[in-house]
Figure (cartoon, rainbow, N blue to C red):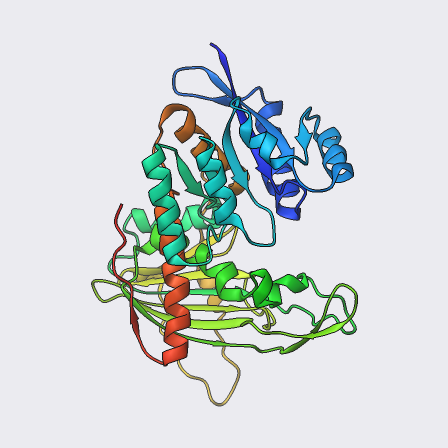
Length: 383
């Protein structure tokens, strides 16, 4: 058994998601466990170099995780042939240009979402990566969450029969920052810094929906700015110029329909911040991030509509919880392991930039539908 090193240029490691999910919960545990096991018995040891703008932050982060390498010189990092993979998770835009520079330097590319700001950009980037013979992917962590894994198992077993509809509900109340500090930074609410709920969350919803139910063929969407006035990190008021709520109706080949509701201006009275429901001829299923419940046709009640007294049935108790069938590992780590194996041993890649393109297609269709107040088709994007 041999240990193979893989040098990773990590741009944006000091961001919240870079530090917590990509280092603390993914690459650092892989390193601490002696590397990622490969099919031939070897182990792949990720060796990240942290790249950013602030030396003090980079040095502190490297020392925290026992990493030897960091730099503020992006060009020098790209020029080192010993580092094969470029990963980008910084805030503030410019992701496509950075990825193109990495491709020009001969690197494989792995990107946080959204991979680009337009469908045309991500298709062009994918074409560049293909011409260069470099491997490419976008981060797709949500499908590895335990609740979604359980729902996928239920669907694959055919437990629900013919699927009739699906519904995805997501969101919570984000305070405006005037009295109570906001839970999201102000860049999320400014178009110039890549803000907007659809751009932020609908790339996730596209790969989640594709993974669970297949690709939708058309949609209609309504967006709005529910809270148009907010206060930033310096407690200065500003006007929100992007949407913070969106409702989409989806059509699927074969007749299934779907609903997607996402909002940063909704108070939660459901099981979790994310709930996905599937209705079928033989049963229904509903999942959160970590749990999943089913109700079969044989166990479906026939309730009456009570007008004289409160509803006597406890509907939640009539659903059966899907048990834990495998130990949970961090969803970001599982996404990382999948792409690392793709780079190291050409394992299947389910998160290529083609999937990123499908996410941007959904985003642009939502905006077009809202602007024109009409249905928009989603033609198949093939590899």
